[in-house]
Figure 1 (tube, rainbow, N blue to C red):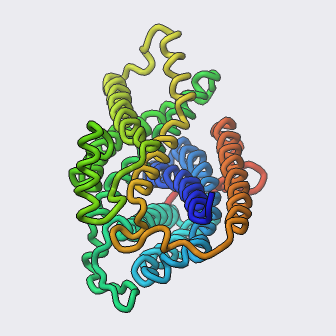
Figure 2: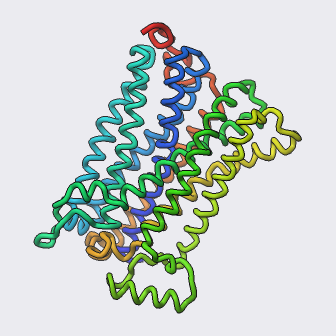
Figure 3: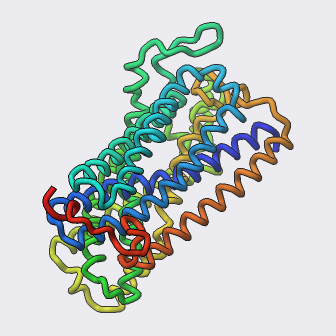
Length: 424
């Protein structure tokens, strides 16, 4: 593999690892905020435990994602200096804004929420978690603005070989950014719901004594997942249609049709217009089938919920089968998410800024040995973080709503100051 291939492989692995953390973080944050809002209103202990239990899973995943995100930002200057030279003023602006939003505002609000447990007025404390949710989704928006520019470079002019912003409104409302965000948000919520259902199912299989706790969690996860699945599928089809702009022949059709399509695209934009290679052509049907099945699954679970049929589901072996199904398929949404990223990014090749800068011109002039060393070091780091993240989450999830760390006084008990559950 040459420098270009190694640099692409390293960035792909970094981005995918980071996105897997992000998708769960964005999926769990609104649910945690919902539970805390119910706790602030009702003062019920069960809502407090729901907030702390799912909140600590969220915090662990968030912390791991920050580390990988820092490494990904570092790679733009390390391995893609050509991109930053050409489009740094345009591409870097939304990323810099995202850094300010994520690492300053979001982290500050999250820190106040974590360490303000039992010390802040309950409504101030609840407001903080909603601010965390808001800034998290603002971060996602700015990242998609940057990525949307790579997909469809609008709102800029090129002067002396350097791209400059000349229409900020066009950059911020780029359909490639807005459309992708409208798809990614429900995907994140759906992924968080699948994880919650899987964890609840594991506890039901183990005969948990906290049946009411996990039934409450399951009900919220099913409602969120059903709504999110419908929007994820609908917006996914819309986003793919806009992304390809009638180029579906790139993923199917006869050899003659593909050849004609390729010739037409090369005449318009040069070689390599949005034509995913054969090895990634499986991604779209896999996403299509998985999204449709999840939509049907969650709508079916919602029907059971409306009919209050969870407890009456018979026979017992069938109930246990579905619990096992939810546990064993828990990682599947992350596979689908990775395929979505690959389809979106690999399909743009050989362009890094579509139609304006090729990937070969964007890569830094390092030696292959240097990039390979970097790939191995960062790859080992990311793999370790991923394993550690899932181990910690699994350990906390298996423990159940007992000896919760979030909001504890250091000995496993909660700081139960009256200000949180009593009058403000």
